[in-house]
Length: 347
Image (cartoon, rainbow, N blue to C red; front, side):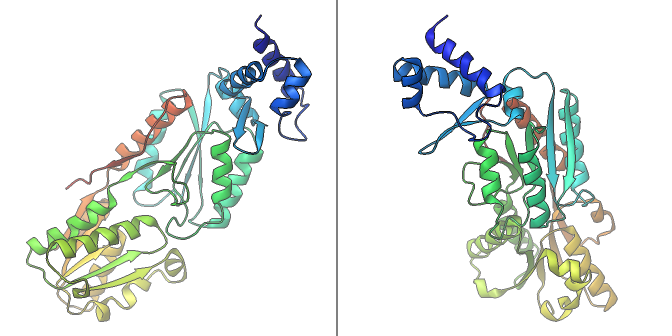
């Protein structure tokens, strides 16, 4: 047996015996060279073997660390896997379809999913991530980030997950701080641009919009909305824009209706963050017995069945998005490299 393989087997057994559990990492290359009386290249070959098998991972400038048991099992030939799916709201009007796409694809490949929800709360997200890191029973994570539009104190936990090389896929949007993350989402800015193009084509010239500020989807749709105005030769001050957060809705389910009539009294075209917001507009104007402006919305959910013809809603590829995310997860569990992908809206 080659010397580097002997060293690899020795270190592997020591890892399994818990010798390095307290320190969390193995001795330095220099110490291993001295211990085994071999060259640094031989030590590096041994470490490379253990990294490939999932027993070790390296942090530049810090050292070589022992991986969590879940990573070791997954890389050493485990025949089944468990994927944690973290969403903001399980019963949200588009997420059941996304979950169905994920579950159908993973289960058909013998992969179990555990589903949890954060309620779009950072403290709940933190507890879930801490549990994943402390209990070695998760082989991959598909997550809808919590309040991706705001700074998030849980970024360090996500980075720890990345260090452990646990496959991690974000749905819709990732956090800007995690520049190397894999995301499966929609082309949010394109949707925002199309909102203005559509309303201009209907003869609208004075615009309003309401977006969600604590999720990056809202920020990106707003960015596309602004691009659409400028591309159409319109001034940014020709639009009235209002924002809301998760907490706004938690405090008052009707808050979106409270100022709609005053804020959008003169606009002939209004862009809504999603179909739920559009429904608030429709109800507010209907209750006041006032003519409804042309509305543009996102997601084309089941709510569209009750919308009047003044409403345009572009379609979210719900189940397809789930299937794409699950397919990428399967590939990553098999050690394949994946990239982010953003799907076109259904017009």
